[in-house]
Image (cartoon, rainbow, N blue to C red; front, side):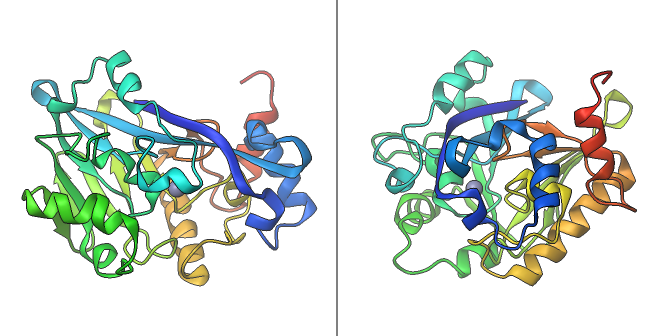
Length: 274
Ligand SMILES: [Zn+2]
């Protein structure tokens, strides 16, 4: 289930944020995610979390949004987020969230680890993050104070290394590059439905869906990010998995066909019969 926390405009124009994309890449992106193109070249983006139902009325939440008005994302992201309302609308009590997976420790993904008063917003949840991600966090990074320190103090921070089986049908896949310990989440639904790959920020704009070689200006390590993105997209295509994205204005998108990235998805998006 997709939960929209916020919707906004990025602080850089799209063509600054994605250097190296050519006209064909932008044309493809416009078909894949028309909502991302704002006036004057602005990049319009969503800030989204995903909830996965677990047995017994429990939930796994993937990412924790931009957070409240006084959260660490307040300097650039559209705070306050509306995740508390989105959860209520979906019938999800924060106390029933057993696990929060943090794909990475950027401000716009860790905002609701704390509520407006600084207390843990998900009181019973373990928060699962890659150990390499915590280790790479700058000492002055506000997420250290906001997320890592309070969760660690309460025994709610759970650091893992590499690929990790979280639960039946839920696997954490390391996808480094955007940040050193970035991870994505594979949701296997078996006969009940299609598998879903929750990308996190391995993919932040449709221009990288049409052409995974296009870098994002705020990736920590561009070659590694590109390799992770290509690997993730080809894995999704091979297994027939849908992609679930944080920042596209469409929550779920088809992966591009493996032999020709971008083509099939672009055609599907532009075909009125589908
Ligand atoms: Zn992000």
